[in-house]
Image (tube, rainbow, N blue to C red; front, side, top):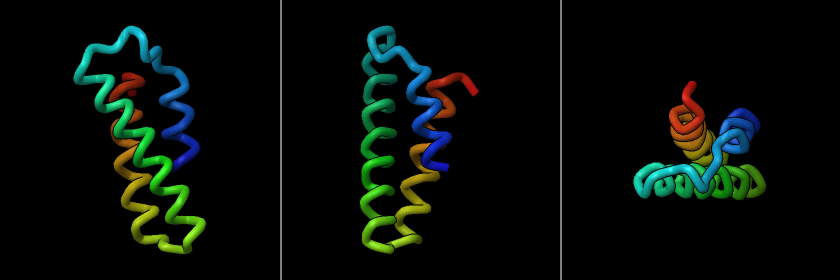
Length: 64
């Protein structure tokens, strides 16, 4: 899920986004960082929750 979210975000040109979309992009990046941190700390429920949020936002931004 995290890889898919990162992949989707990598296809988005941040410079072309409006203010709301940039906020969503930044939130998705934050959720990815939080999920990765939670995985390192073995807090898998929180990691899953953050990964799902990141994946959802990233998919919307990438037009999927």
